[in-house]
Image 1: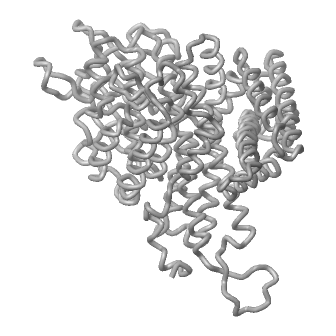
Image 2 (image 1 turned 60 degrees about the vertical axis):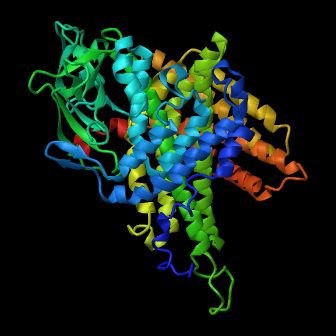
Length: 613
């Protein structure tokens, strides 16, 4: 029986019962809140239409709900193995990789000229979300390969594109980002990997990298490491970093056969989550014969790598929401099926038990998850649209404005899904009660996966410093975002939304603008430590405001739809208004407290000395 938890214990892994993402919400975000079809007016997307967008999404969700989701639990239980110096992936990855490559996931947004499908990022990000929700470890190989190939596409010469890029977009080879070193961590200015120019024009590379995801495997015949290194004579710090493409195997003298390139796997990191994607220690040049090829100009490697890093940050944000989404839908289903207890005030102890969704506190937990998941997804779609316009809008001024917005919101798009996604996943586990922390149910695995997102591609603390220390003060960025807020407010005033929501939102904007100016003055006055002391709180309040913006936009569309007498989607739109109400009532008021911390410079942890712990 559905009411017996033992009877449904193993049903949590059934893909046909968990949609991963709500198809209705995906359509709402793409076509009602945003008009994705309007992007077809841009020359880059002129050959597309709503039909081609939907076809790609249907194909992605079918692959996600079938092959990828079915392999998630086995891949989590049986991570890649380190055997005789090489990594062996789970056997299920071979079929998954072949089908992702066939679908065109690797080059979905890239130009036709390089073998891509030239789809808008706005559409592709939804397809990626389905795939990540189903099996984030499996998708990780594709996301990293796409980013690495895009680096060569953007900055590499014709030879690199022919030898490496085209094989990566085709799925014949994979790619990585090889940044971190044991002694440097996130401080990339301290990397020591070296690249010495050889007579043949290649470079001899020596060094060690750590936490290299998918840095070795038996899935494809080669892996190309996009490696940060120092050329001989390079200046110290970040100004002396170059980008070198280092394949695990190189072409022999015949130009056809692949041979060893003196790249070895020294060890595997045993992670709590993302278990299908190996994290490795990679050594270059232990025998002095590791060859790499310079990408672009010398000493520009970090600026080049920021392209892949920022793309990866958005990818981590999508994964954060996707992982929260699949757990949310699992929690909703469980709450509807699991019977326990009776309504408050029920006097008959023999009355039938009710589904736990009937209890107000369970609905509180579910609504909080919904607010986080659908608010975060809306922000990611918005950011993807800025990316499309920044790259493809015909007018330079439009491209520049959208690039400012994209740059400003990237730390939020990465960190909010990671931090609040973890909270959402914890609530999904809580809804399952004692069964939540058992491995027979999936929420505990998704909770483990989610925790990595606040660390991958820069910790939340680093992104708080980045937002407050640099991005929010970039020329015209905050003003452009304020204009976006004003447009949402103007639209909201045309429908019957509670006036208090709009007033709260306007007050929060003004309060944060004032705070930002005050902190800028502190920094200019030489009080840099005070300015960034509460950068994590600033990121929190800024993110909370951005999600309120997205809920205002969604609520406006929902209210307008409900005004139409012929709507047959009333439950969907009422749910949107409830989630918006929740965000404005419970989250937006937090901003005042966070602003006070930033303004007053509360100094408990600033004055805390290491010896006092």
